[in-house]
Image (cartoon, rainbow, N blue to C red; front, side, top):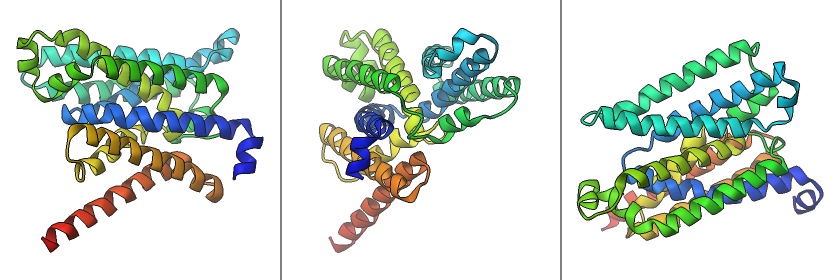
Length: 279
């Protein structure tokens, strides 16, 4: 495995991108779970797929567009979708959860239309649906690196504000925190992380990478910061372990990563139940 990692560039790209995503996906997932917005990842991943399908469709008719990375248009669609969710949350003040299924339905509809116009699925779209180690290029790795730097900078600089808004939004706004703009910044970085994570785990599983490590860490953590730390630790173990297993077993990396994360969650739940039974 180490020899192959040193020899093949696509494996280097996959592992480096996976390590970065293993940090930023659970990191933002903690805030999403606390805000009770875990399903946003599902909605935005389908919007992102629609953007990628649109980019591949444009590549059929515009020769120069074939050289543009489809992830960039996916990021654009995801960003617009995230802002649309925020706007819908304002419209449905007492039914904010409606914003997610509305956006999810629209994303699926757009994706189906663009895919049908592109004459159905091809290998590129399947890579985005289920994840593919081979598909990750240096430009993809660069995009993941830039997004990682932005996410870490935002979380470090706005940690206190994000913390208060996640647990008690009304009190935070009364205290003078500019909730509107922080919400927009946060939802945008979530959109970008989902877009760049799709090539590792795929559109159908990207939300799992943001929620399963958090679900596991919540059961054993004793504070918010510890929850973040353990979520990232479990996320990294899932990504690295999943990529190694996928390489040796020759199976899809996305499914392997998510299954490993689910197994860790189940083990923690069983151990926690056993510990409670003893006491």
